[in-house]
Amino acid sequence: MRLVAFLSGAPHGGAYVSELAPYLKRAQSTVSHHLSVLAQAGIIMSEQHGTWTWYQVVPERLSDLREQLSAFIATAVAPTAGG
Picture 1 (cartoon, rainbow, N blue to C red):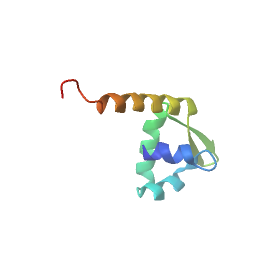
Picture 2: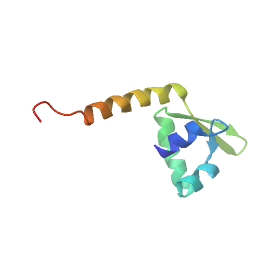
Picture 3: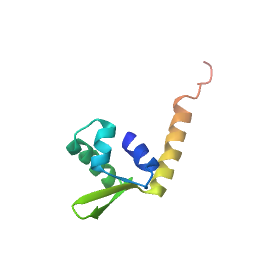
């Protein structure tokens, strides 16, 4: 979630692993692994810039995630009938 939040709010619309690793206080290899999982899920996309890879959130998927998370939270914290 922190990766998606960082990428969605990045000033230039995305970031390189070298920018993400210090923010998350994790090794670049660990961050790269998580970025790979998010990319396979279609949540983020990547673009090669020479030897560097630029990552950014897929806007439509971010919107879908917000809706799903809101629905989940609404049902998870809704009081049950009869107390």
